[in-house]
Length: 341
Image 1 (cartoon, rainbow, N blue to C red):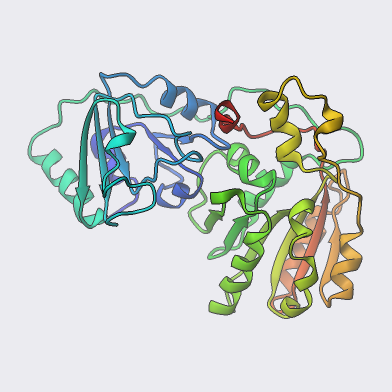
Image 2 (cartoon, rainbow, N blue to C red):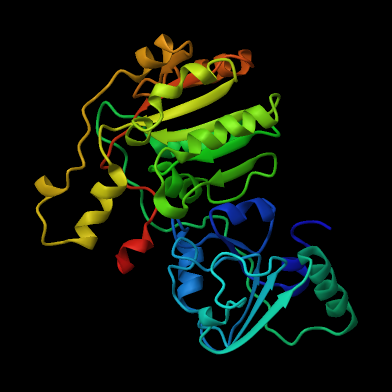
């Protein structure tokens, strides 16, 4: 079954979570983008305009703070399709607490349920109103360029989104990438698997996942976005992974940027000097080289970026660290969670 079949058969606007992107085709004509953390403007507007006249089908969704911002679904009918009993977020085996109005939960194999929905739709047309096709551009905000001496991460993410080698695993740590990547790229990449390990906001945890992925499938290309703050938590373990062939992109902005960008909304009366969000600058390339890794540093004007990517393709077994100078003040993806914090 094609991944876009359900959307087409129901003519239904489709939105997804950070990791839900892996279940949506890049050519989905009803794809409005990611919601909540790093959510696209069109998707967020659509999600927040939900009323009792709407019907929502949630496929494998966990309505947590990173997915729905712990807000109750305002649709008149909400259908949860899940094949996991007592999953994360359930209360007494149900997601009913996540709906304001009529609630329906189907505990069954997801693929079988979706095929049944399509079959029944061909037998008797559903009475729901068709959604308009999604626009080409899913964002309306104007993204400001970085200050001098910093790389433009909008360009970096867009370029990598097209460059990833087929079959790759791309992971985002708890850093700016886990809200910025999906906002900038807007749509899925059908040739890769993308994961963001966001639950619990456990900084540095994605590095262990990257190591585990390489140990499980040594021939898979594994790329990891990690912040300089995250690096502090696993940097002493690089040597053991030097021959795994991991590619680690370090977002070097000498700042806990999620904190710096969120606190003005969370604690507006607190002076920035009390954020404790500053990191001392470190030469991550030298640390990597001392641990047996190769290292490269991206030029702020990106003049050597393509050459570095060519080098990444050459090495399959040796791990590589790529430092990117990032402007902590360049705001790309949105963080709706701050409304609840």
